Structure formats: structure tokens, C-alpha cells
Length: 318
Length: 309
Image 1: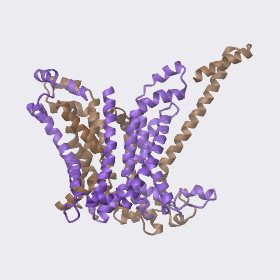
Image 2 (image 1 turned 60 degrees about the vertical axis):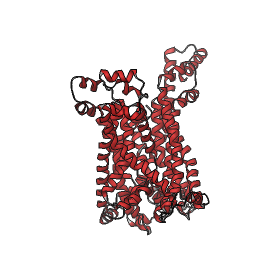
Image 3 (image 1 turned 30 degrees about the vertical axis):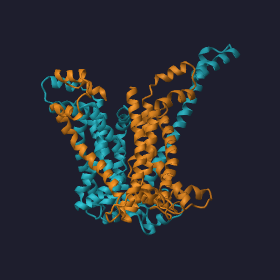
Image 4 (image 1 turned 180 degrees about the vertical axis):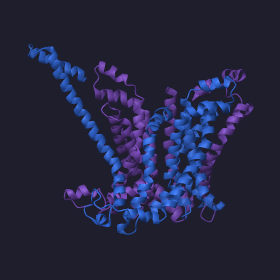
């Protein structure tokens, strides 16, 4: 970050300011407004800052106000939040989201890492084509992914039951029972988001210089040791980022559920997003749903704080 | 490691049978190595084919279901290939005015992408090329990174309530505005990485030669980053093309209905209607296939140097 700042075109007086005077001496706004260049830069940034305020600051502040009031606009304090703690549907949705993340994130990471290592190996031919194919699910709409898999799981139309019937087993009606519906949704999610793990880890592997392996081979290290002691430390930052992003993605999924089970059977496959949608839009209780939004925001931003921390740590190392 | 193993074998064999010339021995070892290499390569390729199969099979299945005849749809177990392809489902989906949904999606996604870039490119330029105080830029960039993580459903409720207060629910321009602002943070974040990849020396030289700042951007920077800019545009377009949650709240009628919502509406109530939704799903996937092949290089490179760099 500091690099382009230092070498950007500057006149003599500005250079003097940047290098000699400590930047934090005067107030940040005074510093911004003193120079014409800065005012122009600010004008260029302002539109996106406004967008930021509209989608970030305003919704969060408004959500904060919403949870303190009821549907008639009467101030009710923290009643919405306390009601949430005793809401079994909410608890079920939260547990479902976390359970899904616990299954989906490690499986996707392992799958992504395995494929990234394979593509990175010298044995994979046309890498560009393999990568293009493997990242397709990343760009398929949630609702389309859900629709595809709903057809795949269909008792008579679907492909998933074909191997089972060939083995002489009873076909499973995947989306009609709570247990199998959970497994089915986890598979859909792995299909949908494991390419993200693959892409991030492949990019991470690309940063590992190849010559260190030759050096290690000369020193007599086995491939396995080289993997654990050199590859893993190199891709660890990317691994953390991938973990956090996958966690965030898997908890926010809604289209796959809408298309496959619609929360059913019963409320067995309600996740947090589906709960918020159901509460706010179908039952028209946006104030109460906002309490669940706050829980989700907390989850996301704890993950996000870790995300930023890793980005910063890595940048300082460079 | 394999090389040393080969050498061990060679010395053993030499010890056992010293009459064999070294030339032949080496050829035998090389052949064995080559065979092992081929085996490994075959194994890797087989696993990759399996991964590709796992990735592509739902798409194949949807496309297949969309052209199956009614008899094939009812066949148990399901046929893996069409025996009697029909386009009935495709006719039906266009009779249900999917074309309007496609046009809506194209208009909304296209305009939102253009507006988003118009807002984000100057911001990314200012953040990387102009000397705003480091602290200020740091705060803005960190905020934008965090917004990129914000679940859309979290902003959906407040924005929906705001929209209904202003009476702009169920309008195409509302969707365009919302998609623009929702993606701005992400776009600035990615564009910033792209701009940082381009060395400033050339621009600096142009400025020294008396070019204006805008001239330097137009003549030097933009041509340099154009491939990345194009990729980011495609990425944003795909995001907008796929967007579901905001549309779920903001779409009420056929005049604004985008493709994802239309597809959800086609999920059948009675059993043999699956061809229609399959056709709709196939339509939605086509741009995605194009985008995946266009974007892969940019994504790998962008993630290697942009996000982590």
C-alpha cells in the first residue's frame, strides 16, 4: 500500500511534506483539504463512499433502530433480542447453518486443495481448460444450482438414484426426510462453493517458488515433508482466507434452499438466511427478523475481522 | 528422490551383472522411470476427469431434461441420453414470456455493471495513484473489504423498507441502482489491486512531458489495464445476472422479473413439467459457461497478486 504512495508523481513542495513532516501531525481532514490534488482525489472517492453508506452504514443503523421497535413503531428496548433467544425456530436455523458450515467448509477445503495440487502438478495437461471447467459452479446462480440439483435428486428423473437402483438398493427420496435433505444440501453446497476453495488455494500455490522444492530435494527431503514444511506454510494465509470466505458463503446461502427444499420437510432445512427471509417477507415481521440479521452480521464480521487481519499481516511481511 | 532411487537400482544391477554394458542399463532404468511417470500422469488425468464430471454433470442433466420427450421423462430408470429429443419445453418456456425476463436481466445487469465501473474506477484510481493521507485510504479500503463480506440479506430488509417508503419497489431502475451500489465496494477492492499491479513510471513520464492527469489516464493507464477491466466487467455482470436475494424482495411483477426469480417461479407444481424449468435453467447457465472460460486467467492472476498482494 505504501509503495504507490511514495513513488507517485509529486512536485517538490509536496515531496517535502510527505517525507519530512510526519503525516499525523495535523487533523486528517485539514490535511486532505489543504491540497488541490487531494480535493480531486476525494471527489473521485466520494461516489463510492456514498454507495458504501447506502448499502452499509444506513442498513446497519436502520437495523439497529428496527430491533428496538415493534411493528407499530413503538420503542420496546431489547425485547426482540430476548425473544430471539427463546425462539426454537431461530435456534434450529442457527444450528442448521453452523452444522452445514462444519460439514461443507472442511470438505470443500480438502477437495479444493487436492484439485489445486493436481492442477499445479506437472502431470495436468492444459491447465487453463481444467481451471475453466472447475470454476464454473462458482458463477452459477444459487437458484439455478438449486434447481439443477433438485432435478438430480428427483426420485424418478434424477441421476443420483441411478447408481443405487443399479446396485439393487431402494431409491432414496432425498429431499423428503430431514437427515437425507441435510446431506443433499451439503452436497449441493460443496458443489457450489468448493471451486472457490480450489481457486484461492491454486492462487496460493502459484506463489510458492518452484526452486525451493529442488533445494529441498537436494537436501534429501521427501515429497511429503516438503509438502508439510514448505507448501503448507506458504499457502497458510490463503488457506485462512478461503476458510473464512467459505464459512461466510455457506451460511448466507438461500437460493439453493429455496429451490430444493423450500425449508422443508417441516422446518428441517431452515438456515439463518431463510429464517430472516421468512420472518421479514412472508410473515411481515421485519423488526423481529432484524434481530436475526444482527446475529448474522456478528458472525460475518467476526469472520471479516479475521480476514482483514490476515490480509494486513501478510502485507506487512512483504 | 526418484532420481536417487533409480541410481540405487542401477548400482545394484551393476554389482550383480557386471557384464551388461552401462549404456543398456541406463536405458532400462529410464524406461522404467518413464512408465512410472506415465502411470502417475494417467492417475492425475483420471482424477481430473472425475472432477470435471462432478462439476458438469448437473448442467448436462438439466440440458438433457429440457429436451426429453414426455415418454422419456416418465421412463424409469431415467435415460442417460435423449432417445427422442423434443423442443416442447423450449417452446413452452418462450410462451411463458421468458424472453422478457432475459431482457430484464440483461438490461439490469448491463447498466448496473457500467454504472458500477463508472463509480469504482475513479475511486480505485484515487486510492492508488493520488496521495491522499495513508490513514484515510486505509480506512476506506478496509471498510470496502468488509462491505464485500456483508450478506446481501442483511441490507435487504432496510433497503426494502426504504424502497417501499419511497414507492420505488418493483422498478427496473431501483434494481439497477441497488446492484450498482451493492457491487461498488467489491469493484473498488479488486480494481485497486489491478491498478497497483501497473507501475506508475510511465504515467509519471507522461505527466513530466506536460500531459494532463486525465490525458495520462486515458492514453496510458486505461489501455494497460483494459484486459483486467474487461474481466472485472464480466465478473460484475455475472454477479448481477445471478443476483437473487435483492430481486426476491424488489420484484413483484413481470415487468421487472429477472431470470433467477422467473426460474424459481417455473419450479413445477405437477410432475411432468420439469422440462420447462430445465430449459430456463439452461438459458441462465449459458453466459456462465462463456464467463468461466473468459475469466479463469484473470481470476487466478487476480487472486495471486490482487487479493493477497
